[in-house]
Every structure is written in structure tokens, then in C-alpha cells.
Image (cartoon, rainbow over all chains, first blue to last red; front, side, top):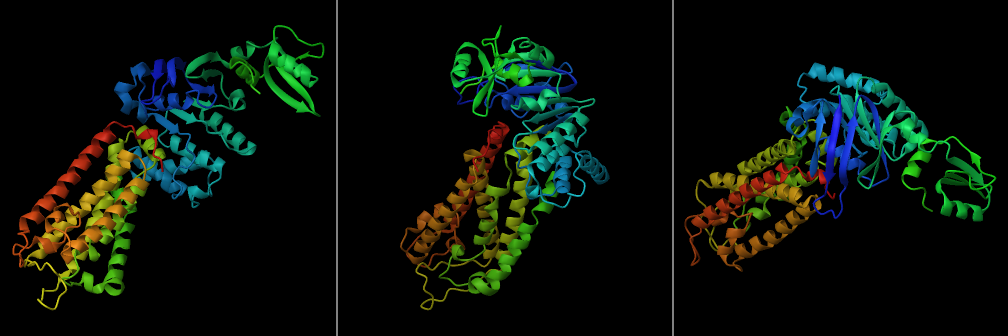
Length: 292
Length: 245
């Protein structure tokens, strides 16, 4: 499914500034990564696309149809995993998914059972059916959330910051699961962790203070800093100088010495070595470098 | 489908109500429930207290932000989501109230033996009025809790207000029964006692039959107004901005 976001602006009733300001994005099949700091407007955009809230201005189209006028049709092909990690703590996964099936209007009991079994198998929660969701770990909860999003066999999945708070193993499991279910679907995946989308998405959008900072292929985004990325290990004074003169993307202290990654047209010190940029370098550069 | 599921899931309310009812009849205040002595009003009995307690979960159980968002993305309007749960809980509370009313018996007023200060004739068909009273009071409080939950967007305000109203009117009711307060003020008592609905007043006070009718109409009207207001609040679909629970 193709989603076109055209000139979306959102001002909250009591908000002083625009949460989103003239956002234009085109999203096709596959996983689309939406990156941005906390408060950049990712969740607001996700909620508007998920038909949970209305934009102040602008339109959204899916397969050429206007979303506002065809909400029900869009919702029938939508799966949504919100940022909330609680789900429904007093239910077990089967009860929870059964409720979601009912909300989606699936009346036939046999069909519901079939869909629930398939969803539980897909997300790898077989054997955990009797446990209440309140007793699930963070990773299991996210998988249960994906199961609920998948239950109606949606063409579009909207997943809002799903990896926050997960341990590395759970995070990898979750990302692998996402890549598995991405076939023949459009997935909009928001995160503030660049590593999440490093190997998952080809197309990305960087949001900053409600505006699109970058939209396009991930490789082109990284290319913006390729040949300009250097690493320098030296003294505290050199670190301060680099912070003033270049755009620093990270500083790590190794045995007390600062190891600074920075973007510049040419190396600032003799000790600087050229390095291959990562998505994180490009992202931090787009945001104007690291603060303290 | 959603409503039947809600009815099934909330059926334990009725079990709790029946348990409380059995407890009230046998242990707590059996004379209030089965045979109400004239010196005790409705509020001292359990027929409103139990539905009242049963209605409080409306404030907590209706739904949370996740459920609203989930409902919306599944194409279920917030109003539908809310009313399916609300009506199920209300039905059980009314059933419990009616069960208690059915068990309730007044003891005739006996001059010089009872402590009551304002002796009012209890009509023979008082149970019909009691059913109406129970229905109106239950619907009123259910609407109040629902409205507060949606308008103020948290669960503590309706519970706090409910407890406050209950406490204030408990004392108020007692004052009226004891003759310390002007009986006309009972027009604004949501727990209006059946004592005030008789058509014969045995003292120099007031003819209270119409007062009872006005009172029940007033509280039923308020319930309807609050339900309509809630409906319009929900139609705006603004609840996704969150509850402050």
C-alpha cells in the first residue's frame, strides 16, 4: 500500500508551537524508518496516520484515496502497535487477542481461534498462552503487541518506538521478527535508536522539531558524510577544539583519552584517521552534532 | 458481539452484589434490609449502598488510553467502546438494586414506640416507588461517574466525588429524618427515602408526595443531561490525549 502524507501540520489545542509543520512524506511497500529525538513529532505523526487523531492541516492518501473520507476502509487494513507497553495486564495473550478479534469485527469463533493460534506462532509466544500479560517481560509484551497488530492480516503496520527498554537479545529478536513480517506489507517504524533501522529499512525520514530534516534512501543519507568522517584520539584540549571547529558525532573515553568522531571537509589534526560513517554519524550530523 | 462479551466479562459484578446482599441480610444490618424500621431511611439500608459501591468501578474499569487507541484503529468508535461496558455494569448494578428492593419490607409506623420525628404514611404500593427510586438513583450515579470520568479524564475525581456525595447525603438524610432540616431540601437528595413519598403527612409539615415525584424527575433529568454531555464529549474523539490515572 502506498501512503502519501501531504503538508501535515499539527497544533495541539493548548500547544504554543507546531508539533508537526508541513510534513510531506511518501511511503511505499517495505519498512519505512522514522527517526527523531524525543519530542520530534514521531508519535504525533504516527497517531495521525493511524487515524487516532486529526491533523490541523494537510491530507493523507492511501492508494490514492483520501484517508479522512475513507477511515473505515483504511482501518480494516491497519495494524497498530502504540508506544504504550502495558497492553491489558489482567488478560492472557489468548483473551487479549480474542478481544482484538472482536474489536475488528471477526464474529466466527473458529476463525478467531485460527487467527489467534497463527499470530501466537508467528511471534513465538507458544507455551506462554496461560500467563497474564502483566507477567510478561518487555520483549514478550512487544511481541504480544505485534501479534495484536497482525491479527487482522493488515497491509499497513504502524509501530511506534517498539524497542525502547528492551535488552539486546530481545531487541534483536524483535527486529528479526519485523523483517520477517515485512514482506508484502508497508511498515512504518519509528524510533530514536538509529541502530534499530540500520539493517532494517532502506527508506528513512529524519524528523526534527516537527519538520522533515531528511527524506530518502538510507544510503544517500549516509553518503552525505562519507569522505568527511574522521576519528581522533587525543587530549581533552583537542576534544574541545574539535567541538568548536567541527561537527562532533560522538565522544568515547578510552583509558581516559577522548576518542572523537567528527565531520569536517578535511581532518583537523594529524592524528585524525578517516573512518566509514554509520547511520548514527549521519543522523547526529543532520541534527547538528552532539551536545555535551 | 462487543456488548455480549462485556456482559459476560463483567458478570462477576452480579456475583459480588449477590454476595454483599446475602452478607447484608444475614450479618450486617438484617433489620434494615428485610424489615426497615421507621427511624431508618433508605440511606441507612443497603439497597442503594451496594449498587453505589458496584458502580464505583465504572471509574476504573471503563477503559484506558491503550484500549481507546486500539478501538479506534480497529474501527470501533470510542462511544461504542464505552457504552458497551457502561451498560453492562449498569445492568448488573440495577439488578442488584432491584433484588434488594424485592427483599425490603417496611415495618409500620407505631406512634410513641418509634423514634421517628417526621412520621409519614407509607403507601401500600411502596415497592413500585422503591423500584423507581432504585432505578433513578442507580442511573444517576452511573451517569455521574461516567461523565466525570470522561470530562475530567481520570478515575479519582468521580470516586472522590461519589464518596463525598454519599457521606454528605448520609448525614443530610439523617438530619431530615430527625427533623433538624427543612424537609423541602430533600428535593436535592439523590438518595431520597421512601419515607418522603407518602401522600399523607401526619405532622404540621408538608405534603411531600409531589416532592418525591419532582425529586425523581430531577435526578433522572440530570442523568439524561450527563449522558448526552458524555456522548458529545466522546464524539469529539479527544480522549486519545490521555487519562491522568
